Length: 475
Figure: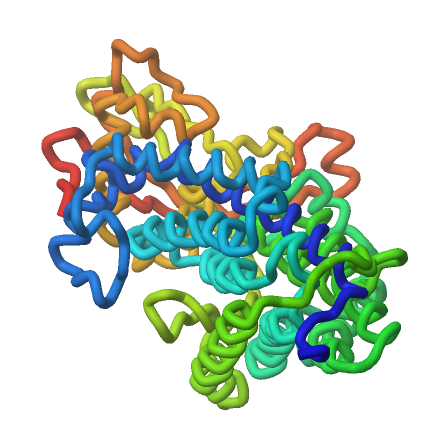
């Protein structure tokens, strides 16, 4: 079938595949370095507890058959190794079916992690990586030119990511319609980056221009992805530039990067045609690609209904394999930033004037003088959940009490999630507590006078002083 392949997108596929492999590598590295404290046998939300209560059919994962911390480490580090091999181009050295199987491995391994990841993996970019990774299996390698249908399905994902995010904004917070959301967003976003303070202090008219440009990029430009070239390339390029602007303004894990990766196959690169000697696609491959296309189109029914519904929800998976999902971000914007500050003391009888020492997290704001760092695309899962906890205690769930318990034990794996513990390894605190503070960015004058990028004000106690025997136990 001459219509089946698109030789002009040869280079587009190559760039996409290497970029996706890099995102996979970051995702597996994040899992490998953080899982013991979050999901391990002594984690805050242990996987063994989860798989006992949730059947395989609702959350397919190899950990339903067996779980141990060593097995999870093997899966995570094995995913790193396969991702690195794909980044190096190993799939191009294999036969077509071998390359497809190699791309299937990281998808299956990461699906096994996400489906038992519970709250820690409840972010839209997890499903986005899985949906993109699934389609990458069928994109082919050097034995065949890129299939048109899979390239179309890649654009379909990108369309739903951008258009869904645009719709949730218009239907959500009024500040998006008034073009004023960026008056607050850079200050109240989950994890500010090193430039977020400067973005916040941009003039108000520029903030309004940013929001207006965002609406154009998310609500109008996505339709241009399905137009002839070079218009589709221009649309994808504009999306890439918008995502790079977001990369500079905050830490959103790999959300921006996977969106950029999705835009790459829509770009028709110069000299992107396949070598003249490439044979036609084998019949079995065409049949498989057609079957996958029919499957994705059928599974798109519920995400499309959600997208056009007045009760649109963000970041929902409608099937346990995360094959076709719905996306969106920041339907509402916080006007005020709150942070939960965790402290401990060695005193046997905790008082307000005790020597309370603050735990420092890696990414979330703490010490007002400490400037935010750039972590994305690496994902600091505990820091992100602490942002949600500051919004409402309901987000703390079962894991927050276990976090306090692990701090009272000076648990090594938990402390590795933090930037610094104020207590030596052989002398854990007698009590811990959590307090809620309001944070705001300092002005230019305050920054010059104090050197602090944040100003914080005590609001109330979040968790009263608690000792080991009183903390919440694992579920």
